[in-house]
Image (cartoon, rainbow, N blue to C red):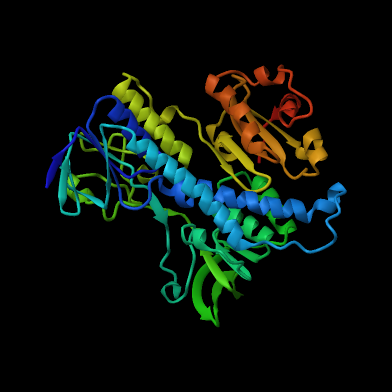
Length: 462
């Protein structure tokens, strides 16, 4: 059977559903195709479930530290019911999925189709036995966890961020390969649940894209909670070890190995383009398999756009949603929005979190222009001292000539929220003095931002 639409959207991550709703509301006959779960990674096995688990892990840690706040819980060791933790997570996810599905079903001009879509031409896709065509097709197919072809990996059981969502037990010893954002969030949460946790990272330091002092502070924070961290590992090989897994690796020229009850792979993601029929559509991919797009998210094929993880222009829920905003504004509102207009912004949702915007220090140095830098420990922040959580620091980088913010790294309580103050100033193109001269509310974390800027000094040589 053949059906013709005004627009077809492949995938229902953070771009697809909202774009589908806008197009249908504008009077376009629209089809939204999803092969698995409405909501994509974020709703089903990304942001929403993992942050729900982080909340449970934080609750366990707060109870564990109750005596630090003068609270007597009788001295009994806490017990984490992992089935209840998972049930709470599932309830939050199901509510989100059901809400999204009901909302999409309310649009008269929108048809929801379940199945795997593949291009059979530049304006046609096939879903099962049905063929659909449209002059406008939007790909929001997302990505999946990468599984490197390490020796022995096919012979051992392993977990990914997807299969971790089904875990309703406490791993005795969780070995995590990958010391970046996903791996570190799981490392802290499962250590707080009660597992022994070891993190193996190939780079010389954790989250290597960040400034060295950020990496060092986060490593110290995790090690203080009892997480074992080994960086600079290479030549990984896996094998069975009884009911568990043995991971062999080279470290500083010597052979090492570690045994764990469970293995989690957190080594990046791969775009879902290998079974999409991209050749039939004539779509150009880059060397990593991402659909190549221009600054307005148009592919090389007229009438096809790519949004979200599948285009390689961002790896977050908020970048995917911003992709939708760009495409919708340019198609429906006579806008001229571009990917290059947005400021890099993301967070690491450990406890405390890391809030990151703009450039790193290395990127600022590479500009070759005079810059200023300031740093302030969270121990100076009254809110942090009152909460008994003084881990971390705040760091900002400023253009010495324009006085505009270039970047910031905030590690500490509520840093993922506080950093938005600086993000808005950057987006407005305002000088840092706007923050420095603004009176804040006491006692908060944000009130120390003016004090932070008072410490600006020239960014000297490395």
